[in-house]
Amino acid sequence: MRLRALLLISPLVLAACTFPRVPTPDTHTPAAFEAPTDVTQPGVSMERWWAAYDDPQLTALVDEALQSAPDARSARARLDEANAIRSEALDAYNPQGALQGSATETTTKTLGTAPSIAFPLPGGGVQTIPLTNNGSVNQEAANFDVSWEIDLFGRRAAARRKANADLAAARFDYEATRTSLAANVADQLFQARGLAIQLEDAKEADRIQRELARVARVKADHGLGAAADADQAASELAQTEAEVSDLGAQLHAARRTLLVLVGRGVDPLASLPAAPQAGAPPAVPATVPGELLARRPDVREASANLRSATGQLKLNELALFPKFTLLPGVGITSTPEFGTNIVSDAWSIGVGVAQPILDLPRLKSEIRVQGARADEAVIAYEKAVQTAYGESENALVELSSDEKRVKLLTDGEAEARRAYDAARLRYGAGIDDLTSVLTAERTWRTARTALTGAQVQALRRSVQTFKALGGGWDPSAPAGERASR
Image 1 (cartoon, rainbow, N blue to C red):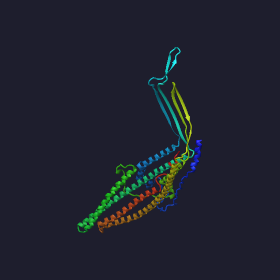
Image 2: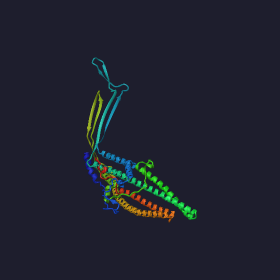
Image 3: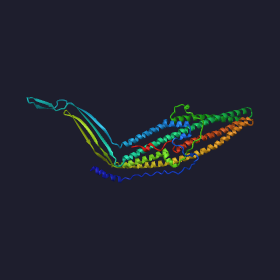
Image 4: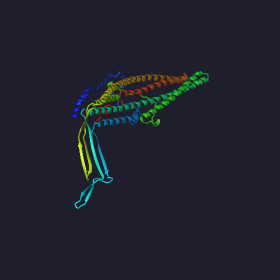
């Protein structure tokens, strides 16, 4: 009768509830990027984009970082934790119970005169038997009680969908961490090489300025030049010397940062050379904005977080439904009595039902809270898509601009080199003095510094472009989306 009453109350409770509606996220993207296509090329691999640079040191450092870097190991540990949490969430819907056992020893001892009963003997006389049972009694018992929720409303399926979404989000966070790590290693390596180039150029500029200062001082001492010119040259020499010192410190810090990134932060700097060289960036893959929904791990993570939020909302809604629990149990007891050991066993089977009544206001509040969180997850997903598109298009535009800048500076460097070579010929012929030659060389080296700086910037920009387009991992079969039961 009570069970029937609860079943009658349940529809009335649910009829009084209104469930939030989660809006469909707007994830449309343009058909194509509004960016130049002169830096793209079909067929470029995205999974291991760093191999496209044909740079053994870069490939070795990225592979080492993905294997041994603290960030990579921490991401792996978080993914393992997410797997364990998923199993824990699903195990809660399996039969629950514990095997309980007990052993009791009871000792009885009569103090003072014990009551007794007298029996007459056939030949005369009386036999007295005490009414106490002095001594020890051992009793042993074992029980195994089980509770198992009968899933009539799909709570287990809803919990599984949420747990799978949480695991998928953790997997995409793992991949996002690794893609960022690979990009950071490549960017830091190219930055270190760029600083090595700048340091080398600064040392050459310091050599030239030192010679110009010497010539200016000699002219001033012999009355062939103004003392102010010598002082100005000396001032410029101090600036070049300071620049050499500053670039040396920056290069030291960049190499140490790179060692930390790959997990060798305490190794000597000599173990990580940074050659003063800059190559040309490879072409990035030709792609369309719609592919970002599958290629970018952060977008996939935002999508998984949305599925998790809606899954939790469904679980909160199902909390309003009654819970039916199967309650089987079995027990055994061993008790000595009157000189014999009496063993008894018992089993039971029952069904429990619970319908929330007084806690309905709290449950409804939790539904409204989770509904708002689901709305936030929708907005976060939409923002992730828009951010991915914006970053990708900006990266393509800036990379194209960098490549054009490199071409222009290459022509400028060649012209400055020709001017320097001509000045040397005139100096050798006695037409120009040493100052003219040194000035021409300084102009050429300044142009060369600008060119190498642009080349390094193009390399670093290409790394960011690969990252923005979702390179650095294989999105075809993420473990989090195919989690087994």
